[in-house]
Length: 531
Image (tube, rainbow, N blue to C red; front, top):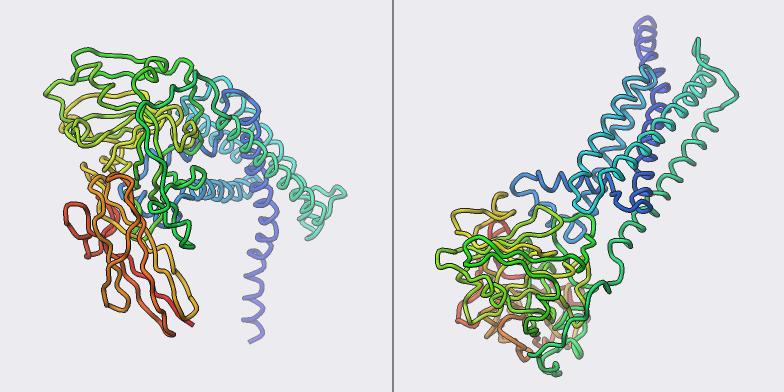
């Protein structure tokens, strides 16, 4: 019995000793990678033309994503999808760093070679940023890798010393460094690297999101919308209800750019080509010289879940898309309009018949809620096409319009499994109540939308009994409406559902479906506990 126990104990000693030797090396590798990433972020913020290696790798991941990935990520993280991706990239990098540290303890040359190879991958990925400069990317990558390698080598020396002093390992380097001093040194470097990274990213984002004042003033709109009335916005009297016009800083953002693009109107052009009579290139001055008009339009993301918040309504100011297209002369053979962004591989294709229909006003917008477009929403110009989900229409940072056929080209998301056509479905949402309430009079309220058909009716079911809700005064057929009904709530658990009827008389689909491939269906339902 004692022999067996002694044998087992002896067998475990090498693994325990190995673990004791490996954890300081793994920590050294993690800190080295974090340092390299932090320095790269700092240099991206300080050097004009440099860019974030984290964001560059993330952009490659976005561009190479498999079909269905967007739906899953957005359903999990919503508008924080980009942050989640970057956190994931950093987490993977630190795991790789831990492995490099362990390898480096035995064969530093191999770990250093792998570190350099990772830097080269980041450099190549960063070349995809059209706003970055190749020489600045090279300088930033080289400095980041160099500093990271220095930290790796330095901490590995200290880790050997710490392990040797703590275990008495034969042949270990034995300077006056304890395990505690190694941890303090590694921690200090790591904290400094994180701080550098945060400062650098803030500098980078602020540089790309500077106040917009680089072009001539947009002329006042010749066609304006009337002021909103109290009947048009019930949120002034109903707590918890989404305002009829969403403030710009609260408007949802879904796009494929990890870094906010910094596009200037200086040198900006819009090319119109393909199946047109005259290929045309408009400058910014020529674009804003066209008749300017305003309209309220609700836009929505196809990834929006039933009851989700990836939808918003705003006042948009710009020029009519048809005015621009008519300058070039659209040929009858053109059945698809493809819009391209200046700063990414994003493309959106929509039927020409939808764009040319005189009953709707697709536009090139350059103002949002009476202010210049924020950079995150597409400055200096973006498409707003009433009635179509954003993935087939709402191109930000617009610079190219191509007339082609529906068969000749698939937009960015179509190749990833989303439907070719993207009309916004009739949908509704309960804003309040969403949790427990006190017994008594309770306002049940929310929004409903079916651009560009409008909403004619909203019904609310309380424990299976349907009633009509009161609607806000519609401000256009291209926007959502608010709805509200008063409820004498008694104690207990209650189920509330909502459904909308659009302007054509069609009732919102009851059968649930996921967002992919053409939008989520189903009646929004909440469970409310009345105390």
